[in-house]
Length: 97
Image (cartoon, rainbow, N blue to C red; front, side, top):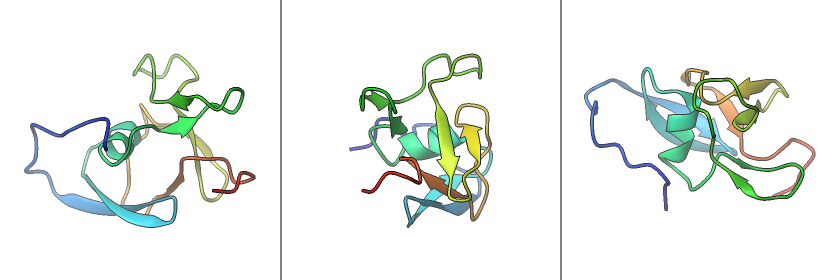
């Protein structure tokens, strides 16, 4: 079940991005954090403890929302705008599902 439910600003254009190899939709202008959490219960799992992470400060000051794109690039989900065709992973490239 998704952690977030969209209740406002639903009239923005939709776009598709890939989340763990599956196509999902977001709205133009969404941050990656919003886009991912409207589809799942977490952004990622902690690389140290395995605990679920979903962001903390929501303004790019902490290290809690780092995610990895399929090309290996790391981005802050709270301050990165989701783009059509973006390929995002909720687990590191070295980790298997």
